[in-house]
Image (cartoon, rainbow, N blue to C red; front, side):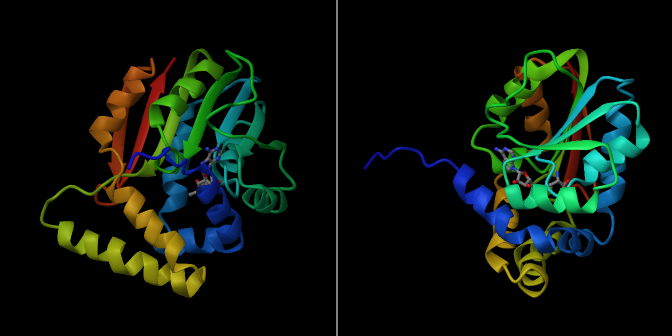
Length: 232
Ligand SMILES: C[S@@+](CC[C@H](N)C(=O)[O-])C[C@H]1O[C@@H](n2cnc3c(N)ncnc32)[C@H](O)[C@@H]1O
C-alpha cells in the first residue's frame, strides 16, 4: 500500500533533544578525540568573513560556531538548530562568546537571500529528507562568492579495513551510546544513517546540482568522515 512519506524531521529533533546533555562527551570518545580537528578544518575552509554575517547551521552544542567566532572575531556569528535542547547546551557552553543562537529548520531558513559570507554545518545532511533541498536553501542565503563547508560521516569504502570499520560502527558505537548517553538507539541510528548516506563522490555531485562551484572534498578517519566545500 502506498502511504505518505514520513519526514525524518520530528524523530531527529526529539532524538537530539534527548541526547543533548551527553552529546559532547560521546563525540569526543567515539571519534577518539579527533572531532575538534575536523571542525578546525571546516573553519579554515570557510575562510575569513571580514565583518560580514556567518551561519553555522545544525550547530548543535555549538563547537563549529565557537571555533569560527574565536578565529574570526570581527564577523557576526549565528548558530542555528531545530533542537532547542542542543541550542541551550550551546548557549551554556559559550555564554562568553559573541554568537547569536537561533532556532531554525534547515529546510526553510528564516533568512533573506544573499545574507551570509559563509555557511558551515556538521552532521546535518545525513539527518534530512533531501540533501538537495537543504543545499539549495543554503545556496539561497549565501552571498555570491560565499563559501559552504559541510562535515559529515561517509559510508566506508569496501577495502581491507572495511570489516573492522563496519564492526566498530555496528557494535562499538551503539555500545558506547548505551554506556555514555544511555541511548543505544540514537547511536544505532548514527550507524544506519551513515551506511545509507551518499558516498563522498555522490555528495559532491549534489553540491554541484544545487549550484555550487569549485566543489571539492577531503576524507578523514579511514574514509569515514568527509568534508565538502564549495562556492556560490
Ligand atoms: C550530530 S549533531 C551535530 C552538531 C554540531 N554541528 C557538531 O558539529 O557537533 C546534528 C544536529 O543537526 C540538527 N538538525 C538535524 N536536522 C536539522 C534541520 N532540519 N534543521 C536544523 N537542525 C537540524 C540536530 O538537531 C543536531 O543538533
